[in-house]
Length: 535
Image (cartoon, rainbow, N blue to C red; front, top):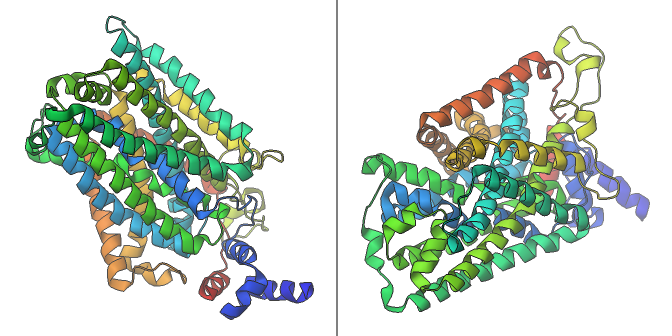
């Protein structure tokens, strides 16, 4: 019987379409591995995440209501409570549409490589290596920037509590940076101490803690505010950014995307959950539902509780000032903000997981060397591998921890260096946020752009399909919205300098070194179609 099952599994790997009744005999895990092998990879990580654990990871990174707390000061500057509430709602719709297109791609081609992997599979042959390489590096830098933003705001929130109790304390930017480094060290502890098979429980616990915290906030704050609630504040426009209402509203919406963009993180653990082609779209949409259901009530309640808008807009930590105005108690306000700080911290380990997986996936893309071919000299025997410098080193899975340890340390090292920009400018928070959101949305959209120009027919069979009309509508919307939001995120001009610098470095790396080495995965399209069709 064992030999028979192995033979049938091998038939699936070779691309034969098996009856659905035989899937049980092959085994779901074997079928998942066969789908992965058809995309040019073998399984190296355990499928240790349940779908609820993966949802916990997606939500714990996104934590939309915590994102509201981190960006509320910026949103209020663009137009007061009106923009703060409106942007949270509108940006959810915009980002959800973009993520629907990404969810379809995950269903068709589940891989920890995510966006760069999709780009390589879908792009025309003459563009696929360069476009996939560019998207891969952009994804990595985008997640590193996003993780840096979470680390930085955790440090800012902690410092804000100290400053709240000691307003005469004059802190320097390097004080916050030192706290930033401490947060990096503390957030790595769960990664190195919790067994990989238990990480699923960590992400679930983080998600539950966040949901409980949100419910406490939206119940306790209005109860303590009693007769001090002012819902009419939400209808009032009050911007101090210097922009006219129309562009201020648009920039508020793009800032609001930070609250939801990280849902795409779950893409990079596709190889660590069972049946990813079926479950990934479910996780995407469930995370967005949770995000909207927590972010909107929190923002509405907090904006209705504001007593002195000027004080909130000028506060070092605006959410702490809102809690104080609503409750009238420094102790209660401190407890609420301290709980938020703990939650900010608990989000970081999930971000390290995402950063390490995408970096590892890009490094492990090593194709079996082939003899030199005059028709393709760039991929000779000596130059047929890897997406990162020192890929052989970074593509290793630690034998004891069963995680990509080296790429985790690489990610933390980048964040430690990137955090230095806060010393150069204490307004760097907004720049880091815009950089992270724009880079991630670029990677979400590039493979959809390829589909939008007429290549939807190249998608393999999949569990989640947007259909012909729906697919083109989502893909074209994602492209148009990226252009609009991208222009807005590049204001002020320092943002454009940062983004331009990143892409200059990417192109230089490609021209000088990687164009001779990056080959991408070897895809068996027939096998991929057949195995996806089984389900």
